[in-house]
Image (cartoon, rainbow, N blue to C red; front, side, top):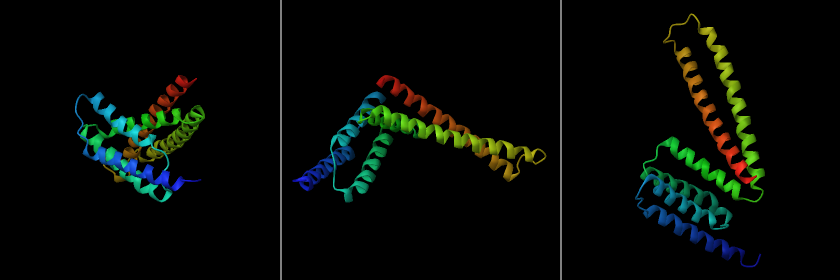
Length: 173
């Protein structure tokens, strides 16, 4: 453990320097070039090893804020940002020790979440049959319809994520 604190303090300074670069960055070029620049910042930040434990939360918040700003500067829509972030997560998992295992764990987690959402959707669809004679503007009916729509979108998003994970797993195999 000799020098561990010194290494972590140095890593903290290095990560803070990357955050500073990120905050001053001006993204130019095509969308692909902007995404590549954002990814390069993320890779540079992630390549720096451990920092003092008490600084991890604060550093992660600053990193997320800096990334959000870069995504906004790049003109990405909220859904695109979610997809890019998830792809980055997949890449990190795949590159980690036991990458295949990590990807399978993430896939199982998402499939479980998808089953839960599908069950919730079935419940709403069952409940909506009770509104057969209700006025179309009935607040309970409108709420149930909105919940159904949101759950369907959420399930589709989870299916997309599972598909991306399966593609990455095949690439590792």
